[in-house]
Length: 77
Image 1 (tube, rainbow, N blue to C red):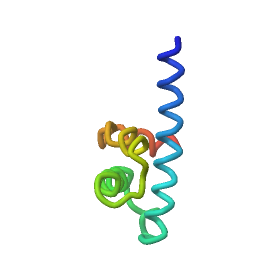
Image 2: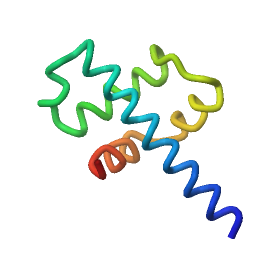
Image 3: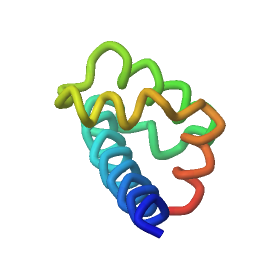
């Protein structure tokens, strides 16, 4: 039960972080809104690995997501 709650918390944190990063990226790339979910996920994946200003914990939380995971989380918004 405790493990389940932790996973739920991690998932919520991942979603919040992803949408914060999408906001950051959309400031520098206004056309991001018009791109496909798979393009945005690829862009996010690269940004998370190279350019995003994240704490070590937040980076670890996001780097364990696959591109498909990113697409699914983006589509839930």
